[in-house]
View 1 (cartoon, helix red, strand yellow):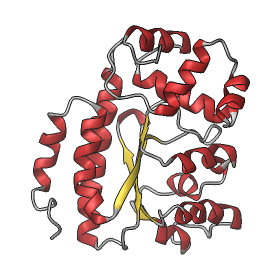
View 2 (view 1 turned 60 degrees about the horizontal axis):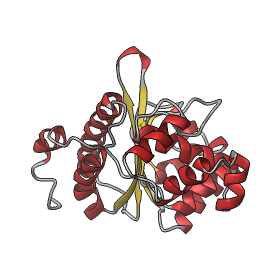
View 3 (view 1 turned 135 degrees about the vertical axis):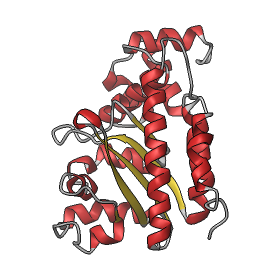
View 4 (view 1 turned 45 degrees about the vertical axis):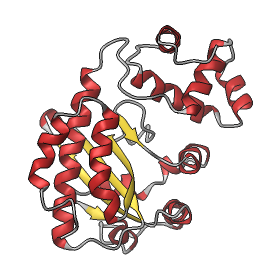
Length: 245
């Protein structure tokens, strides 16, 4: 048994005592990274008509993947989202590639998986999460892991579901002005440029990213700052000295 998974049933109590999103994710990574899963995306399953995370979604996506996902419209041909719409079972990227999720991925869908593999993220475990009132969430664990054994898979699913629920609770409990996560360098840059009065297009040009990516970073920053609008996000960031002067 891999070290760290022997006390698996203590995990809910540990993350229950963690009062920030970053602390919860650190607890999760302490268990998943030794198994080869170093990247995660955890949150609500995006709506098919708007397949880009913007409300409750916590990730540590590499910048190359984040940018490509928006600029190359990966969200509209991500086979993971297609599989989530068809199954209630946990599945792996290998099973997805092999057509074991009810469909054979198209060439364009495989391009999304191949791009991730090219970034050193060829493997993944995708855990659907179903809760009251029709809520559907997901926890994606990605990395260089070998195909998990049934026992490791079950334990990772346990970790994933409890992590999702704790992050969802923390996201819902954010109050105005309470920052529980550090803004990323890109999010800080976006807020600084917006404070200077630039439009989304102007920010995109200045930061050398797409307008869609600008909006993604805005949404992430707004969520972290528990702000109801962009203007409020900038005001909170300034008040808390999160932006360079």
